[in-house]
Amino acid sequence: MHGDSILTDAWRRVAELASQPGANLIRPLFGADDQRARRFSASLDDLTLDFSKTSIGAETLVALLDLAHAAGLAGFRDRLFAGEAVNTTEGRAAMHMALRAPADAGLRAVLPEGVDDASGLAARERDRMRRFVASVHDGSLRGATGQPFDTVLNIGIGGSDLGPRMATEALTLARGPLMRARFLSNVDGHGFMALARELDPARTLVLVASKSFTTQETAENARAVRRWVAGALGEGAVGDHFVALSTNLKAVASFGIRPERVFGFRDWVGGRYSLWSPVGLSIALAAGWDAFQAMLDGARAMDVHFQAADFADNLPVLLALTGIWHVNGLGLRSHCVLAYDDRLARFPAYLQQLEMESNGKSVGLDGHPVPRPTCPVVFGGPGTDAQHSFMQLVHQGTSVIPVDFILAAEADHERPDAHRMLAANAFAQSEALLRGKARAEVEAEMRAHGASEPEIQAVAPHRVFSGDRPSTTIMFRRLDAYALGRLIALYEHKVAVQGWIWGINSFDQWGVELGKVLARGILSELAPGARPGGHDGSTASLIARFRALRGE
Ligand code: F6P
Image 1 (tube, rainbow, N blue to C red):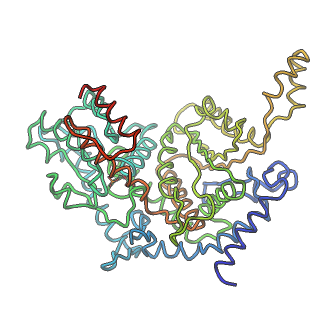
Image 2 (cartoon, rainbow, N blue to C red; image 1 turned 30 degrees about the horizontal axis):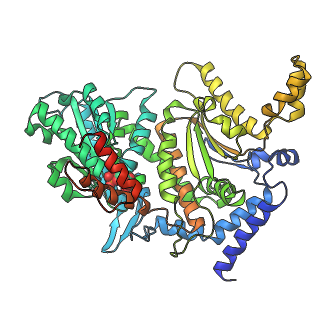
Image 3 (tube, helix red, strand yellow; image 1 turned 135 degrees about the horizontal axis):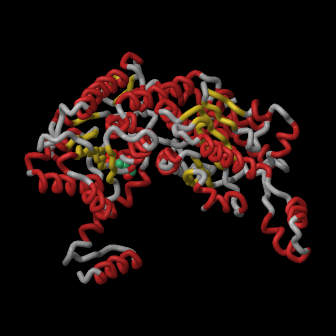
């Protein structure tokens, strides 16, 4: 049979299963199989993905695995690891795996003009980073006034901010940082105003992280911080305090950053995959080189697993297929991520870029509109906080929203009771979503508490939980740097797998461009005396009102 019709049939089979009565029910699956939790879980070392609290049964799993095969997943994965230009609209490889591989791993990236020894190049730059980090930590590299650096300020946005910021927080919240790390992303000047109050320029090492080195917000913030350093320490101090992390060495040079303070990478590293590259320098400075290296090692372990494991045991594949079932089978358009760990408080924000910038697409690889929904809306937060805010909607709202629960079994603090309480809440949430609470149960409980019949009739409907709401749980022993790297890479590959199955390019982000271009035009029109023009009525009147409110 032709590949296209195999794929069409595979999608049809998934749709058929999803349209069967009770396709969304989970509880009966547990009733029918007392080994379900084991059968619908997969592990890599101490990391387990439990997707048994979904309505994926044996037949559905087969259909989803068939879909993965029919979509050519193995071929896409091979092309990814072979360094081919899987980012077809930009003609680039997506070889972030080379950043966490040993120097001699032989990972290559195919470029229009030749082939990069990607793992070799990455290892050489990593070595420079390691020596640089050591010299900052041992005080041999100091600021212009001769004082050692005690703070690293990372200026960057999107992938040049979210990954490093999330990982730095994850690795330093419990044990404390080796250096204080601060992040400046938004072009809203209030952010830097607050930082400038807190930081001492003489002791601040500034990293300008920008893959392109053309990003408007980062450039503006870098200029502001440059003025702050130069104003306090003199123009000559800038060279001692600034570091650049970029692929655009020309632009870096014109900003005046010394060549030995520039850490480069190639455009086969996408922005949202760049925390493993020099863009992760803030992580290494704040959490230490060993932690940074362990994070790379954890990600590498997931790469090896993703490449080698059968799809039926392959964590990124299974996580991706679970999402495909929810989006395309059951028509669920949102996805919630709850990490029961304060150190991962920024993980959902990081994932929003990874998932939605990668797979927020409606045009397929063939240039035609995709025939089915792609990326859901991803949101989340730390548990238990989320339970006291938006989880009401997840339990009783009109939309069914699948949840990923993320939890470490051991904590890095001395309050085992608190950690058990945290874990109890994570397990209880997924159990509540699954189990629900029937009307009869609610009424019996109210009666037992002495409620009157009218009160029961009035209130009971509000206390009912439908149940059969899906979740997956990702659990591992402890959140060390290795586990963090593995977790991030799990989601990176999940996103790629989903993109391939949806038939889209997960590695470009053209959707961010139009707004950038329009903002440049509007910026010039906001200058005093400028004349706006060529806008729709709303935008024109907002610009006029903005200027009037400012008295301009
Ligand atoms: O606008 C989106 C984006 O291009 C992201 O993909 C990227 O992570 C971010 O901007 C920052 O880009 P850069 O690292 O080039 O400054």
